[in-house]
Image (cartoon, rainbow over all chains, first blue to last red; front, side):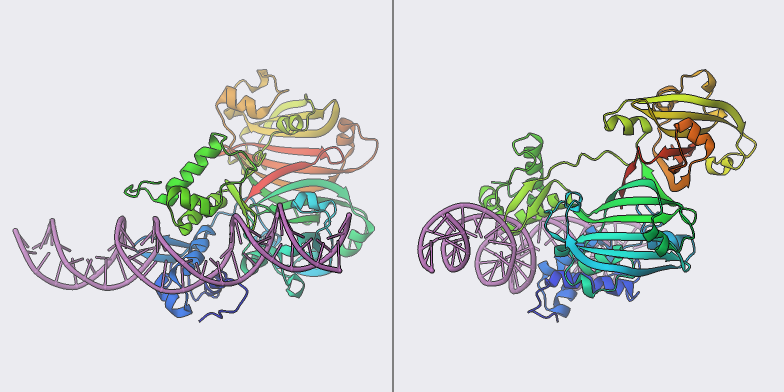
Length: 235
Length: 235
DNA sequence: TATGTATAGTTGTATAGACACGTTATGTTA
DNA sequence: TAACATAACGTGTCTATACAACTATACATA
């Protein structure tokens, strides 16, 4: 039975619950979910509320629904599309990603407001993270995300995948990005963080990530002797 | 008032009606839509039904909805696709592209064979081109393409868009690419071609272009003080 | 055996109403 | 005039219910 007095919508919490069950492998790909009416009983919800949760999970590709048969855990796509997170990139190379948060505060959006589609005075969190692959520092990444979008952001463990965090905790599924690539020389700041002995060229990657509206802005510097960024493009 | 006896669901027909109004410019980008309750009255539908139609249009990116304000026709994204040729990139910045062929020969594929899916001993054309935007050299690009794929390649004017040439002359439509980005320091060769006074970081872009099978392999070096590469990525 | 039929269980579509909560404009008060 | 309250109106969430459409199974019939 879900708590009636929670400020978080019931359909949203139900989504979380189902996603968790899938993540914990209590529900495996292909497995049938309980029927809508069973969810109604189990959590004391009306059917429309349950349906809202299931519908959204379907649109996110988490489950598939078949009229007259039921709902099933989706079988994940094998093919990785163009957009890949650092975590995914490192793991796909058979290495272990690690992340250290090196800076965390909030500032007015300023010029970022334009990219993010918000007022220049609106507050954004600034999170700088050092990214490692098999203990070797390979990138410094700074993320700017509107405070209003992510309540309690400061209390959360940011050492994992930001994509996953946004999806599981805030229900924000990143769908696309606009990314620019350029080459720059390392600065003393970056050299210190990346443990570089000398000045070297770094790959600078600037991205705005979108759901339908902009979600967050990110600037990263990669040691390109250690790490190439590969993307798949279409049409 | 919608026909109650139609086999097509009401919410679906309402979506069509709204889409048509947008297409006919009765509703222009940014315009507010009638409120949910007004749609209810006008078509004799319940609010949930109207909401289903509007919700789906929102997810399709046709409209945007704002709590407390209303629903609005979405402003279409200007978005060009992910894959853009040099010619397109330069022209979209309002500059004039120019190209000089600086090298043309044929060599055995060697290690390129792996990328191109051909035998290591198969011949490939090597075409190096200097790319300029408004007379300023911004990139050196070397293309490797199997000789068998492009008969009479040596007789052709290569100073234009390679995409267009492949499409119009050989009927090969490039559909996707796999592209890697990294940062390197300029070498004396590149400095001479790009008319650089001193060593500077360059953006190195390596791509394999596909129709269904690989078509050609390309390595480019961009002056990244002059030129950023921007791509749109999905999912 | 093969075919049709009834039935139970599933999701899909739709109604009517209630309250919560954000936004905007207006009017009132200090 | 400036700041604050309020009302009107918008979307967001949720309940309770009904019937339609589809699927799978069991069972009866030709």
